[in-house]
Length: 133
Image (cartoon, rainbow, N blue to C red; front, side):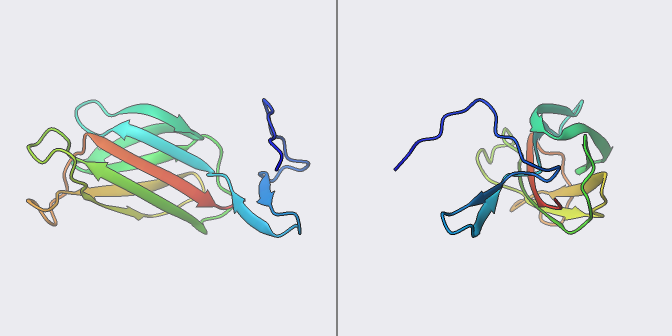
């Protein structure tokens, strides 16, 4: 087994690097974008990659704006949200992603289990985007 230790991995083309096995079969790709942000009060990004800003659209509704556009809208978004500090520390709320465009994606956070179906600002919101080379 070998260990690769480098400061930068660079693709030979404009496409993102792809992880392959020794036979050349694709085994994975890196996330195209990700973000961790505070969704209460003044919305603020804690840390991110390829996310330029977050827009606070309404209670429990946010738009994640990409720094570099996706090539198409056939990407996958996974995420989580939590109302940490409401008495239910550590529980996760429901989160939905909709209106995927090449420049942004909208998300809605819903209180759970005490407030099912109610859009709720979350202390912690996270999302990762995969696909759309």
